[in-house]
Length: 247
Image (tube, rainbow, N blue to C red; front, side, top):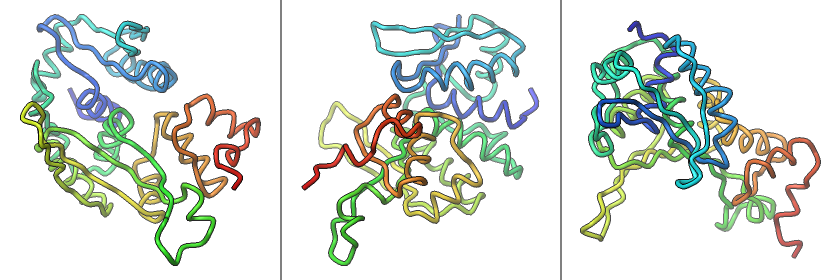
């Protein structure tokens, strides 16, 4: 298939949240509480459009996930030809067609798809001396984390971010447990870099976009609040200051 920006975004999503099961179907699953709107409005519509096959998500309450199965040999073949395997957790990487592209829209779409599914946007307080009382009290400092166990994928994503000239850091989080694998982390931090990310890549997952919008409006975004609470804040029906101790 031709790599369009829509297909590139699907490939990013699939690299993060998708899998091939028993060579009979592909599936994708997100968080049952935070990702339903994203799956209904973005993921399913993109899959339906690109593969010309109606895709509808559903709940899987036993695992607290929301997503879908697609039983189609041709779609399975497409993903396999692009390098995806049955067991991709530790060896998944960016498809060569994306890695070798110089089209910034295609590169951005893949990164957006991956990060919307498997990235984290968070805000921290600045506790060091020299920062204002506002920055010490509220979660004002933005960071995007991509934290995975595939070294190939983290290196590939770093390469793509460099193509978009988005500064970031890469480090290894080593485990002390024999039963666990090391984790590899990309971090994009600071207001200027987050704004550049928003301009070049953006967020299609409302779970992450609401955090960004709250931060832009109020200058901070409380942590440990759910999507419904963030929606209420953006509707001016909930005060974000209420999540902080008045003292």
